[in-house]
Image (cartoon, rainbow, N blue to C red; front, side, top):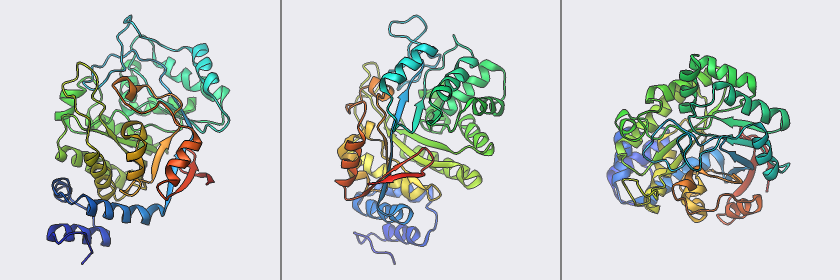
Length: 365
């Protein structure tokens, strides 16, 4: 019988499953969300994490770009979007995009991370040209661009299939999809929080199609609003089922909701307890994912350090200037330096590993 920090028989059964590599069920996950024994959950997640990554913790030097904030969707959690002509609405065209990047560029940047609004005022060609422009002027940087929800949007405005959209984007220089737009992959949640965006099926289809085209992608989960624990676990289960099929996901990123938008229907941030529990449960449930990321933008540097002993082996990157989480009240800085990231990892007694987009090592510190 596996050793746990408690005498709880059910926890011991779950621990035994973890140690023998048996997949946890949604019912197991519900128990882990219900129990007060957070330390044992963290201990088990840490064991799994060490089996996969040792003491290595990955980070990347990247630049965040939001080419447009004009959006047709009305997501209940978003403070970033603007309607056409609304004060603060913008759309970067080629010269503005290059000026934005030039001001923030350094030669250590490995990746452009690009997401934006679903802007019906520009055609699909605009989004293709954004990638072409960046690849032309910065061919050394990978382009991680456009969520699965954006892929579905491009298919609607262009009349192409999602496969054709992805093929066109890849021809323009797209390297990988970010994990955004997933929110919670249940239709009850999406009907309330993001009714105009891609459905659960369409989000999964976009990533499966990308995987079948040879692309590795990312997966997220936005938790802490109207979602239930069961819905979080259904979300994880749907991701691991697709991963069983394609092995195309590189990393899972649980994202804590940022609810400071004045007209939001909720005003409480996720608790540190919930953040650590969700990261640890993610590591235990997603047995076929190599990496679980602690997103410092949403949970802050101190909780990110804690997460490194609760199942996370990645802390994301420098970002340079993050806008979307900050538009709804993220309290963290908009970027961190490489030096700050390395210190954060070392202070948690872990080994900093600078990586590229695909988890190839650049340098170990």
